[in-house]
Image 1 (cartoon, rainbow, N blue to C red):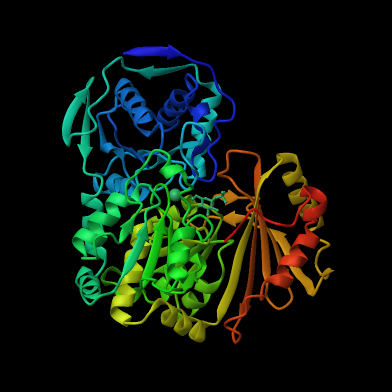
Image 2 (image 1 turned 120 degrees about the horizontal axis):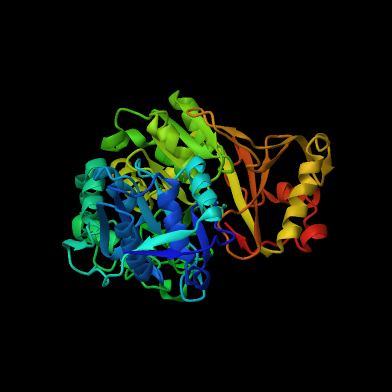
Length: 537
Ligand code: G1P
Ligand code: ZN
């Protein structure tokens, strides 16, 4: 057992979802080790505890896993459950934490960010409820990174992560498990697998793009081998350390091949994709892309068709920038609706307290109380379950939904790689004018209200400030501005636009006036020299 002297390293503050940096940063001597030791120290030590460890298979996943195992052993942990070859999707890790009642888990992923020697890496601590550590915990971990003096690691050979079963490292037991089996059982306990099997047997076609990331093995095992989707339905299904050189982000920009297939002549009935670590989802029907905000609303509206939710929902939660489409579903169902800051960690308390059953974010995340993370394949199976029962196409289902509830037009503009001072100046410029914006005219829009979102957690009463600038326009449209907390280079400004229409259900230009007004009011041109975003979703 070795105690290694170390010094605090700047900048180890966890963001929206754990600590994310460039891989070379993580590979600097002591960088990963300091943070892992801070996780143990910041959560009361590892002595006698059990953990789940796994990652999305990106470059450095296996090496980092070995380091964590040796450090867990040196810190006195009793047992660590690891996915074979260090692989676990984020939802599967969350499930294993809950199923085995461990003290928490360490997930290695930078989600949808590219992977590779020069790309991104990340590490996140999840607590014993299976969910991302809340801010109170990440604050303690961060505080520890600032006064850390040593870390502990045992001097031992690497653990065999390829073979299932238990082995010892120091006094600790490592159990290597099939990453898929328990997760598949969980999905089987939630959805009507027989109905979905019949759907496929009747000729329904699907293309699931795993984007060379972690969901390949899960999707093959569940969709093809268990539910009978045609062999080859899962594409890009072998996890690769660099995600095949791509960007494993399931949206129309990065999953362009899938989009082209789904908009083409020979499109299958249903298309879906998931991200690096398997917690995001993209849903596409033949000829129609479903926005994540709409997807949340449709799942909620049809939830009782799924066996696990047949008795109805306790409530629905969405992140603040997500569209209000789900709010009207909640209203009609007569259940509570919660609006939280961006980031899955804010749903944890609501789920634990039984206040909500389904949650979602505009960033392609949907999930329920079955785990404490968003869950890409779960969303896909939810859609398949609904389509199997309602016997409609995706287009028909969406039309039916919009006719019943009206339509929230929605888009997000991302301005990436902005110098941090400029991005902050833009945000501050709006913040300084929040009180005077009311009544301002910009283009065809008039501001009806503006504020900065502060969230008070209804369960623990924790207050989170500075969670996004909101501008409402007369007629009900809304813009939200916030800075990304997951990027690794410069700043990313996200601008979320939304407008509701109860009657006009197909107007591609519906958001144009809101977009122009927001660019003008926030002075994008003056602050960052452009009004054209890098990514539009
Ligand atoms: C982004 C998304 C957010 C999501 C997070 C982790 O965070 O916007 O909804 O929870 O990734 O997947 P951001 O970069 O905006 O801070
Ligand atoms: Zn992810």
